[in-house]
Amino acid sequence: MGVRIQSLTKAFGELRAIDDLSTGFQTGKISVLLGASGCGKTTTLRCIAGLEQPDSGEILIDDEPVYASARRIDLAPEQRRLGMVFQSYAIWPHLTVAENVGLPLKAQKVAKAEIERRVKDTLAIVGLAQHADKSATKLSGGQQQRVSIARCLVGDPRLILMDEPLSNLDARLRVEMRHEIRQIQRRTGATILFVTHDQEEAMSLGDEIFLFNKGKVVQNGAPEELYFRPSVRYVAEFLGKANLFPVSVRGGAESGLVTARPSGQVIAQLPGSSQAAGEMLCMVRPESWRVSPAGGPGLPGRVQETTFVGDRRELRVETPIGEQTVVTAGFERFEVGEGLSLTVAPEHAHLLRDAA
Ligand SMILES: Nc1ncnc2c1ncn2[C@@H]1O[C@H](COP(=O)(O)OP(=O)(O)OP(=O)(O)O)[C@@H](O)[C@H]1O
Ligand SMILES: [Mg+2]
Image (cartoon, rainbow, N blue to C red; front, side, top):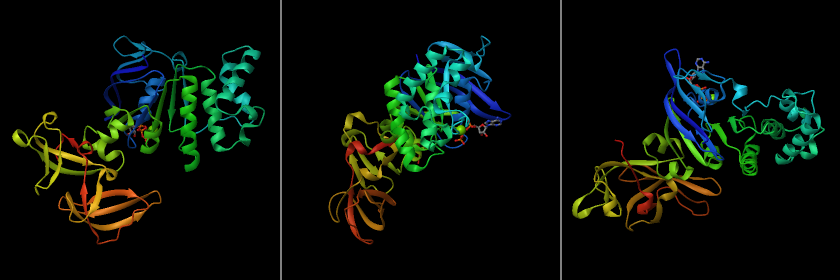
């Protein structure tokens, strides 16, 4: 169910925009496609929509193949029964809000009374009921984007594709619209694929995040999964700030003891049996370092810089394992040059396989 992609490839000349991609997006969830500019997010969406023809592979929507190179299946966009919302609102200025939303139904020659009923219901879902008869251009940016979301919902698509729909809005409205989109998803049960390169937007909106790099999915999972348990360094560094340093994990009698390389500084004692021994990379998120007075147990450090950001305070702390970024509550005070100790709970010392 949902969307399944098998061995999908799309090249532009020498460049593989999608590189042998196999993945799946669940029904009734918001799946966020996240990644740096040029990693293939838009191309993936356009292939699913039928706006771009892949070179090979398969795309199935609700188990129906809409594209399958081996079987020569390639449905036209209008046969795929999906809706799209883009960065630009594509609103008709000479039409009212209700007329804009009703356009797809009018094109399908749906009866007038039926159009009126469905437009009314859909405008209620996106919170624009009282604006139905206004000229669409009289609305704010956020409201106009809701018109384009309503126009996409009105056709009752089985799948909604959104490509950076909030990028043109100011910061405050963007945050508001994230909640709106979540609410709309809950009310309609729609399956949504949402493209962004904004990691905060991805984490606050996604039921599942798919982090892309060079036309492939590097890791997918719940936002917490990617943030706290990244599988590789690329994911750790893409989402939020990560302190990364090389460590050795002991086996045998000292099983699970994590020490920094080369200093030998003890970082954590993990539950022994669950850990493979060897040389690994350790990730500690800035808010996972616990700060205690100098001379206590843990990693000795000295404050190099403090930045007050209101709800939190960011510290740069020099330690024997390199400079660490530490985040504390905003009301906690630190002076530059002050000594302190850093410790981390075993569950927040995350080990990665790839070499430093
Ligand atoms: N029509 C095209 N012709 C040639 N190259 C293209 C075309 N469309 C996309 N590309 C290239 O394919 C790669 C993937 O592009 P795509 O638009 O999918 O990236 P994206 O992840 O959406 O990036 P952004 O975050 O900047 O929107 C890029 O290197 C891009 O330059
Ligand atoms: Mg794009």
